[in-house]
Length: 234
Image (cartoon, rainbow, N blue to C red; front, top):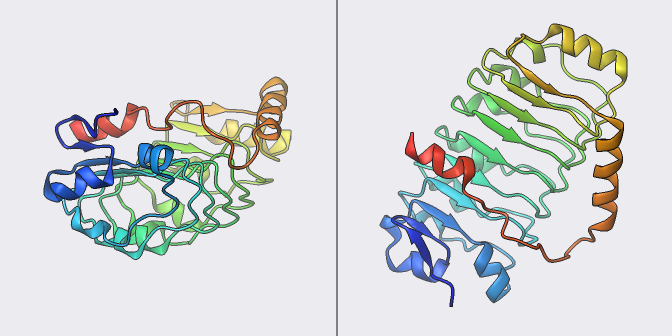
């Protein structure tokens, strides 16, 4: 039997979390999906008023409940490997957010409201269907990592090299042309690590996406606690 908690404040089950809602700092719902077939989030997430990290990956969910906007301490939100087509507007009511993980969804465009997230440090949008980035991202003064692998981007905005805190920009397996990449590389500050498309990586990414069928089970839980818990220790 899997334990519902691994350390103080970290819960892996809704049932356990509801017994002590104000003690919940990290809520990872992967096991609820694996063991109980969870397909959507409950509407009463706002009972977890001290929640700092919410991990809802791999449950094939296509929306977040409105209660997400009522989590005043939320700093990390992972909603990867789901069926989201649009970023929920509720996340822009969470000014303390530092990390947003929406990789492996079905996003085609983004809400142009990133000025509402002044503390955003990491934005992972890899493996979606994005063709453009909103101009409001230019105001993300604290953004350190922008991960855009395997999207349909054919160009990048002119403000990209001006992001003052950017350290990692990943544009592998996109539609960016070599000329655009050379211009981007020359414009970025020397402190930025630029992950460029390489033929072997592009082919590997395409093969992996083709082999993995929608709804196929994951081999391991998507939450590994790397940045999530580090963010809570700061």
